[in-house]
Length: 269
Image (cartoon, rainbow, N blue to C red):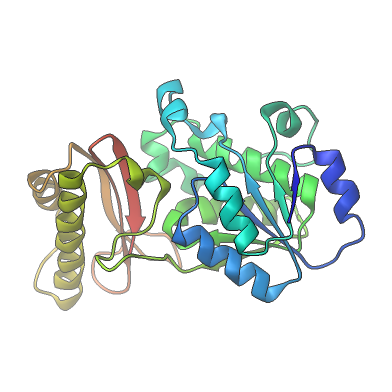
């Protein structure tokens, strides 16, 4: 495994290499990241993993500064997984050049998390675009947990005719159906128990809607989630994955974001 902190040195190293697969991360790696990386290694002999906590996608300095970081542990894991290259740049290395592509934010960016995190998706798409211009991978692997982000990156790539294909990957969950997330490390024991209870409630709620035993009502389900320990609920919305429209009867994923302990938890299933 080779570690690069400078984009030009990385570009010189990978020049002429084909079938590069890129896995972007903000570090504090977990089993979800591990699954993406293993899939990349299986598909290609050139895997690049980035570690960069992007300040432009945070809504406050406090949130940015408190984001979990464990670079030594991350590098040990990446070495164990036999990743080819790790790109761990500083801010200037990513943002000190003019990009070829204009940032395209689809109207879907105004829904769900977009209503509650001003500028978040612009920051996400911008940093991914810059990474793609530096690395020029054939594929980028993204998890379905952050489905809204995945859709927006995919549509930015299509709009700018970037020669990188997005591969969406299933969400990896623990035995309690909790999606792995770097922020979960900040939860206290009781908060984790409450999170498990909330996920059970949401799973049952979705099942009841699809079976016709219940009708979607945001106010009612919000009360239940708050009752089981959430501090605040940003949204709970059933969405058809094909047309991204609100769907309250048939095939849909329940998208939600709520605050528990000192973290904001998002998921969909």
